[in-house]
Length: 521
Image 1: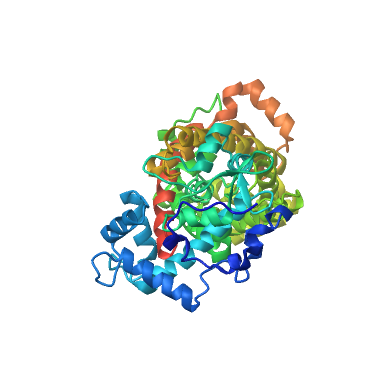
Image 2: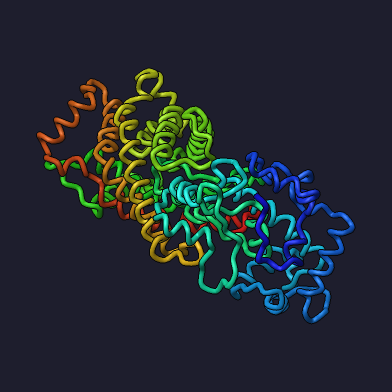
């Protein structure tokens, strides 16, 4: 089938490489399921030949309306309008900002060419992620599947609208035509031509904007890891995000450490007969060890962020391959399975540090000289098994925490995307913080009884001659002596730290991310 004539101006469609159209071979082989992406001799990028250079200079001169050697937003708006291309002011500003390396508010010829090269690379990655059948064409079902993989469910009619690019402010679109089987499709050349000089707002930006496990740290690193786009992995941005997340978690945990220590004390010591209020708990800590005692256990809590995050990310990526998914982005069920297993591996690796954190938080003044001294005394007096007390309830708590957090977050994300995402998947700071806070709170609420039992098992192992209860016997004892409310001791300070922890970690994350050269899309 011959490729339909593009509605894009010939001047615009001609600036990309024309190697794949020489002799018409690439397009005439579509019947044999040959992909235009694999047919490009030079990879489809701007090839830099004399004819290509001439076309680029002509296009640049057309868009440089005021003939000052640079394309500003006003030039771009007027120049594109003359070519029959209509863009919103926001889209035009994004184009100039993306290519403006010297920050002078306009694109010179070198910046213009660099922008087009970089832009086509991004478009190619997006096209390949959408082209599930790898046949060089995108159809309605592939649009629906791509969004479904990201946790966004849309109707066939909505997918057709995306495919046709029917949006307010767009007066033209790519040529959508019917295959032999009656399916509406768009091939690579039509996709590329349409998105020329169009900011890269596309489906993968949902991944870019809606990360939350990397950004938010509420003291429990049990969330399903975030997905990273192909572009982020290829450019090395993924490790910068992880470093920024680790730094944000360290600051956030340090700022909320007094509330975290109070939670641990109330989990272990509060009971029906030993009523402990938050004010009383803080007063007790200050009387026993002074102001500095409020941060006991924080050091080990911060140190364990790096190994836990690194192990979990690496395990998650490996498990994605083991479960047999050839997709770059997993669906919700696969993410939950892979994320939970990665969490188990990471927690198993650093669990002795969890025990040390609890013991350091509960210690009396002068009991230990530091983390190493604490670990040494536990080993000598209690043996290696003491470092794994409470291991079972801790592992069991991963599934409800991660599962409910993921389910709630995806539900809130879908609701926002379906109602408000008319031109961008960017939710803004407030929506992102609200969704992350609500989902994390629900996850903590579901797994809190298991977390309390874990903490008590870690603490009681230090009492000489005391019985060492199993998880089941401890659950029964708490229910019999304190009722169901006993499983939620310390919940108040735990919830009180969520909002400041999320807010602090987000602010610090954004600042570290910028300092590492990660620009927000």
